[in-house]
Image (cartoon, rainbow, N blue to C red; front, side):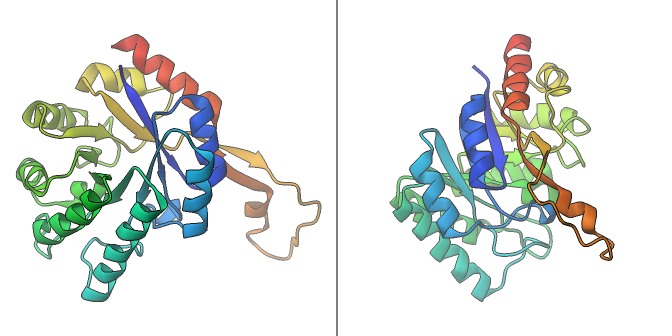
Length: 246
């Protein structure tokens, strides 16, 4: 069975993920920055309303994945709070200045997550590491459960060959979960090329807001006319295409 994790930018998107048949939600904020930690109110309400698995990204800011001591202390606290709220897992990613995996700090966050019986995903910081295949072994040694990756390319389809090799190298030791640019239209091809068992995407559509007035003197007024949320129909179709292919 192929499972889908939906990257949800809000509780509304998380509910759509559940209705569309997703196995798990990765709750985050600020998708334009690649995702940052959502507010704890969103996490709490999502946990209350979801009966599927809920993972939360632990990322205090956009930009690179080299964190100073203050930022790391924030991440430690966020992992603990997610555990106390009852999340199923957290999503992390930390690098050293030379592009290697920061195994020491990653392992520290994994240990905190384990105290709360949470799983851990290493996110697409992995795609920025200086050697994907050595990085894979480093992440495995930290105790992470899965790696979200596009194979070091802009999209999972572009990185399909690397993803296939990573899945082969990982074996049963860690789950390789492709993500980036996956849609209901290309997932079947990605399954064929990689043999994936889990995949990740936002599957969003634009929805009209309910505002009647827009200040057209502002150059970005059109941005206020549409809202982006995960689309349960796209999610259903992506799962259908993936599962019919395997």
